[in-house]
Image (cartoon, rainbow, N blue to C red):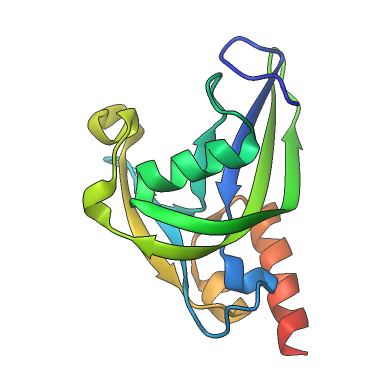
Length: 158
């Protein structure tokens, strides 16, 4: 179990990646990601997710909470497909990327502290087509995730 909470030596984050792009088998259904923007900065697209909190039972519980907070959505079974570790001076950040089918989404169910905090910027849902060209056209972050998703999108086509 990863250490959780602020000030710990290791901080875990969970992210929901564009499921159809990594071979979930949802066919041509687009997936949901989020567009982040701050005043004076160019917007970018990222996967939905955030930090694992002390009250989250496990990584998947944190993922489900974050998907509900940011999209007002529920997801099906989640499978981890990529882990990125960013060593830092005081804190090592570990990002766990999951794929999961989007079961439903209702923006009126969104909630959480970041929606009311102007320092976190604006966050809106973006539908992404499940192919490498659509992924490449986004300003999706981080680059390691983009490489992984495009590689697996090409494998699906081949």
